[in-house]
Structure formats: C-alpha cells, structure tokens
Length: 237
Image 1 (cartoon, rainbow, N blue to C red):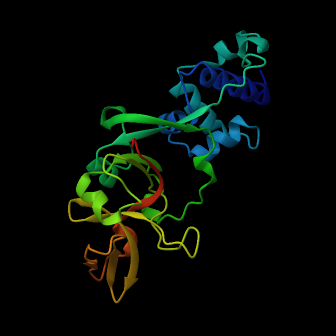
Image 2 (image 1 turned 180 degrees about the vertical axis):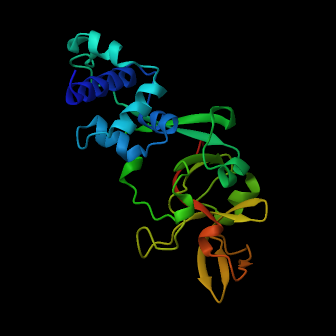
Image 3 (image 1 turned 30 degrees about the vertical axis):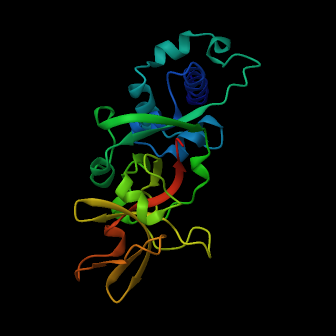
C-alpha cells in the first residue's frame, strides 16, 4: 500500500473514532505529543503527516498497517448524513497542576469539558520557548476568594480555560486588557497585568481590592509568572 493511501485510510479511521465519541482531536494531541493544530490540519486534509507523526498516531490508537489495509475504504468513512458536532475535550485540573505540569495526565484530570471542535484553534498563541512542549489548554475552577477581586468578570465556582501558550503581555484584543492566571508563590491569582520597573503589577477589577506587585529577580521575566491567558469562563449560575 502506498503512503498516500495509508495516510487517507488513517485519516478516515481517525474521523470514524471521533464520530463514535471515543476520540477527540485534543485527546489525540495529548496521546501523540503532536500540536492540536497539526491534528486538525491532518483531519481536514490541509496538510499531510510526516512518517514519524503517522507512526505516533498508529501507536497511540493501537492500529497496524495491516488492519488499515484490510478494511474496505467505505467502512472507514464516517456515516453519511451525520451532522454531529465534533467536540474538543479540555481537561479540568487542580490549580497546582495547571501551574506546574507541562502535560495533564488522565490521573491528574479532575474532570473534562467539551467545546466545539476547532474553536480553541482560532486563538493565536504567544508563548515563551519554555512552553513549547506544554499542553496548551487546561480548565481550573475559581474559588470565592479568587473571584472577588475580578467581580463581575469571574464568579465563584466558575471554570476558566487557561491558554498556557499565551504567557506574553501583548494585548489579545486592544484596547481591552488581557485577564491572566498569575503565579504568586504557590497561589494562582486572576488579574489584569502590567510590567513596570522590574515589577509585575496585578490590577483587580473591583476597586475595593488592592493592587498587588511581584518584583522580578534579574534572571526572571514576566512570562515566568503568567500561567496563561483566560480565554473562556463558564459559570454555572
């Protein structure tokens, strides 16, 4: 079997598993270590996988070339007329895990949330080199004390999705300020952030809360403290 035929059979089998609800593009990205954008480009025929990347998917899904080559191509295709909305799965983890773990393992995920496939891929990444191998999106639950300084942007008990590939101070949609998850010692704070005179300035939304400062050491940069940009907040109330 030629490479292009193997490539297409694997693409169709991947879509079939997504359609069955046993796989998502974000889960496949975590299993293989490939960027979710690469997975999306592969699924939508925008780019071909390299041989090493193809091998990673085969191994992650416990597939062999023999299995793909023996199945009729019609059996691999998703059912005709099925307009089911494919979903991306974002892990929800503890705040400590979100701050410190490059990859969110299944045992470290408290829960998961489903989002429309491809929606998160619309966000531009602005990450430091040290975040290159970090899993990009992770959800955390906001506590009452964390929500108060940013009321009404954040509510206690809400789940925020952090884009950990956006640890730059560049504005996402100027003139609106970015909202970040910020590492302060062992705590995670949610604030608007500025940088002046070797200090991170953490600005609350609520006027009755003080401005916090984090003084940077000579070898530290703002990106060392920015866990990620808050790109989504879902409140249960």
